[in-house]
Length: 134
Length: 165
Image 1: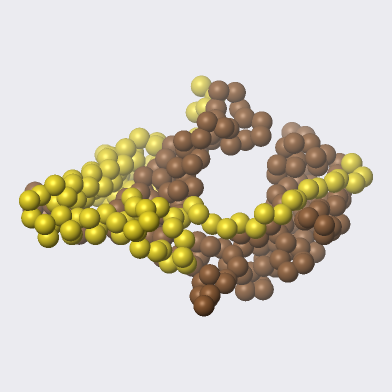
Image 2: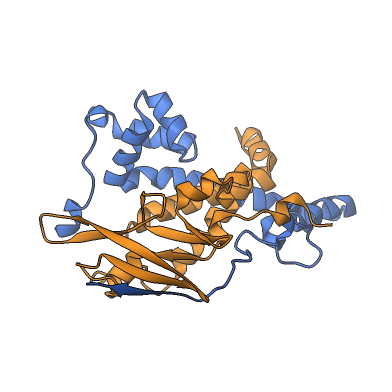
């Protein structure tokens, strides 16, 4: 298949690694390549190239990350629907100060005065190019 | 009062022109040596160089007034500059001034837009493909989402994990 040729080769330093161990280590570090590479005794770029060759190695790490987010959201959801008003207030405060509420009017202002990370004031000027001699 | 952070200019926000799209669209031909860049009413004459490949293809670059090749030139205080010129004048990219979680938020919002877009990222997309290296971008995206959650709900999920263990 043509698309297989586009994949980078497995680095020589990673050729002897147990792929199961690599997958578990990546999951343990939530897909953070430098920390996983340090534990496996290979360089970060080599491990990154290995994951480019075998993207499935990151699947377990992805699951771990999603589980982490889901666990946190589950706790907030439970607190938001609890009978204790202080827990409800705590959960509402957490949610309002998080990215979930970044565009909500009651959410606190972010550093730099922007409401969300993608909301920037790019200078708009008409730009064009005319080639000469070719 | 305008804060220091608000008043600061970032390289990302400056008006810019990239050579790659111009080359892909044919505005810069394979033999082009120079051209004129217009930023509104201000114009600059810019040299263009090519990195030729044995298969006949080439990459085009602008030649910055500082002498370096550059894929993107930006307008700053009436002058044209490449990344190196702007950094020498004290400007930085926006992400350089962000904390780890803010950077993750910035990355996540950009990646989400790219991953969910139906429009091809390339000007001339490869057949049957909207986005190249999708799995790598997806991995970067969920890693960024994790970092955001870790920052914003720090300790919550860890506490559950410890209780469950």
